[in-house]
Amino acid sequence: QLQLEQSGGGSVQPGGSLKLSCAASRSALDFHAISWFRQVPGKEREGISCFSTAQNSIIYADSVQGRFTTSRDNAKDAVSLQMNSLKPEDTGIYYCAASAQCRKRSGTIITLGTPHWGQGTQVTVSS
Image (cartoon, rainbow, N blue to C red; front, side, top):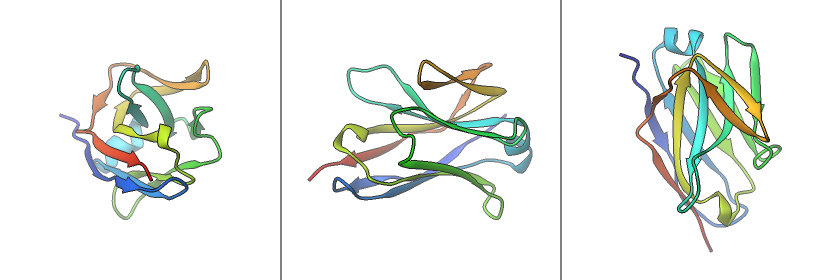
């Protein structure tokens, strides 16, 4: 059973930064694409980034391109999401997901194959 353990998040003022982490087994990270999604109240869950060791690719949704960075931390067996220049509209519950592959479609990230989800973590951007 693939398990994802999220950490990080919290509250920050507009323009600030936060970092999220999604820990998994090394084999899970080697053979799955790790995506980050966010759920904003009243809207559909949006895929915002994907890191895939197997596909040798890193992709971002248009809404976060240039502000967010996803990377793999081999020392911690985790994929992180560094979020800079945060805006109030970035507020939401953030989830990591492991899937067979990921793609960028219509400006957002989608997963291919049934994803496994992390537990979610709240990010609040407010003055």
